[in-house]
Image (cartoon, rainbow, N blue to C red; front, side, top):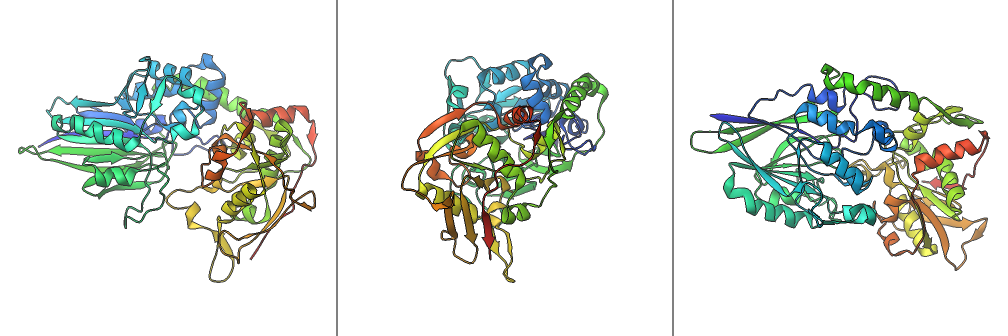
Length: 504
């Protein structure tokens, strides 16, 4: 019996050290801690499922300080990564940054549905790895083709992102006769319940269930949704998914018997807090620079804003969201603004630090101003009102549609510049019972609505935005806009609060 080992990480998002950057507590997470638990020999392959360049405070810091290099690549190289694929967020900083990452990386990049039209990026569709013990494993990399919807066109210059399923199918056909086992590294998640097969989304953003059940891969390693899904077999294929930020990693064991039959098993393993001296010590000065930057004061508020639960904020309004809407309206001069907050509740002390800005607004989104009318606004508000469901006792809770298969609190938007109310006793689609602006009904005219670039694509159930005219684009991210806003205001005492209510 011959065996091979595969270690798998995904969605590390630039989290190398054992910190979430929201506080200074040491946590069991980070690439340096996860890879310290790998045991690699000649029959071991280490792979990653993408979303490496963007997400953490360190990722933001090194993007803005090019002299810091690309620590993500350094960490992967030290751990002996062999193969990676791309995630949708790996395109966020543009083609030049992606090229620098791939050049610095010793691992091969596989992404079968990213065609390099000018031939200047080292991206392959697949690779067959022949191990010293004779086991041959075929690897195919795939990224969700929703990159086309989300990414700025200039970041995809010279690239074509094609249909994910077709690329997975064609690549499998090309390699399956040359392998003992095949592995699809898919930067996408599951669109169906893995237990029942019940469809959860038909958008096409995630097709992991379809790949696992309709194609004959031995293994489909999913990503993107940040769900903790231990290994299980569906449709004859072993599949799993990991939580984000290297909080866990997967260890797969492939065994080949004397008849040539291969079996696969998998464990998902909690990351610890221990690490090797290299490259931890090499990167520690950079990490200390990041921590000093995060601790810098950004500005002062007249009153602190304590963290609130997601349901409390959704029902009663969010002063944090109001603050970011104020910044968006100030920057773009839009009449109306909407913003979402991250999955982790956070607040502001009176003396706000850069750390608190990044904790309260966790996405480096840019801004888009759309032209909308009352019908579009009502559709958007009705989508937000779907965030709630009523329990048997008549009290609200967050709808499973925003929790399963992926926690998506960030798809609930808070609006400024209009006053509105939801009545949760009414059926979905008819819950907006009040909508006005400046104390008057909306006029029969277009309005300007500012939102982040992710929402402007229609993502999160807001597809109707796709047909709205773009009035303005602001390419500076909201985190930086917030820092600039604080610089222009010595003490921020108040900002606009909409007349918003939820009744049940």
